[in-house]
Length: 420
Image 1 (cartoon, rainbow, N blue to C red):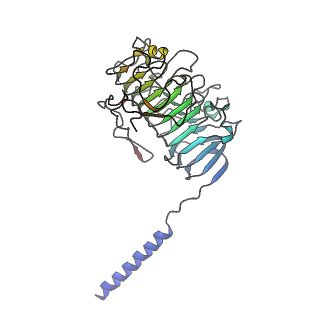
Image 2 (cartoon, helix red, strand yellow):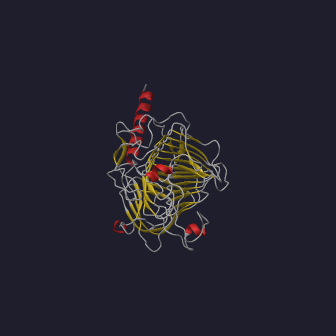
Image 3 (tube, rainbow, N blue to C red):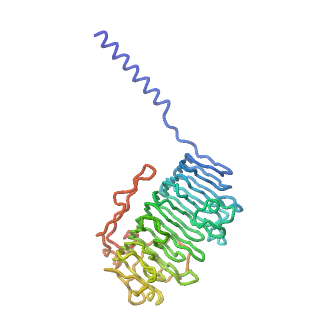
């Protein structure tokens, strides 16, 4: 019994010691910092609520990762360099709805004159970038034009030549993973997301004031297998979705695009091309439950270089406030129509009944009013007219940065937003 009591006492002492040790090593929340004149190689963790002022080009090297925590603000503050972030490793931007991560410029630069950005470059990923997550992240005022000294040009990324405006994000690893969810992109000079590879999920985002004279909001090429869902795209210069299998990378481009709301697309492009969703060059596309309001065209295709014959289109709604708009989405050799599509025959037919958006807004307007509400009122022809009878690619999810991201379940309504 003596030995038993002694052992019990020793055990209690040992447990008490462990408890004290754990308390002394408890995690302390770092104090937000302001980092001045940041440039060059970056990796590790950028702490919650901190500010990083970028004065030169940045790079995440192959095999390295940069994790950006909620509430971090990255300010590109050199108007001469107009920095790019080259991603050869991994980027994880983990904002929250209350505290998003923001890639931006100084507030005093956000003028009407600078409406179309081009004040910093973009997030330009190389073929060794295995994973990128943009979750609750804001990208604004980007799309600077490249020069001979631009890191993206030197590294042979994107178009690899001087004189092109870079997209907000470029991704090219056919074996990689890219997730963009709950985020915003606006005041972008040309293309928004330009993607040439990977397993891709783009969902629940808002894109507006994008493309001064050209450019698509989401531009997908060969090597990509993507679900694109519940995005609100307002007034892209050309298309909200440009879907193509160009480039001959494997796998074949396959995009399931559903429950997106696309408003005023294509009217600001000086030459006639697309104006909502574009399909071409053997892309396989499944297009369901998309609401196209006041767009220049319906789902436009290239008869000389058509989409994959397995492409499916159904349960989309088209509304036009003008005769040009109505004419632009009537079925033809260049405009796809689908099963159970709701296609207006006359001006004003099938009003989607947005909660707060004047449908007579100039179709070339690119200024987004944050008070607008694209939810659907009672009696909207889009309510109850969607289909859920299709397969999305990432219903079981993609694990990126240690987190599981699943494609949202399709809705029984058409568009990105149902009733309030």
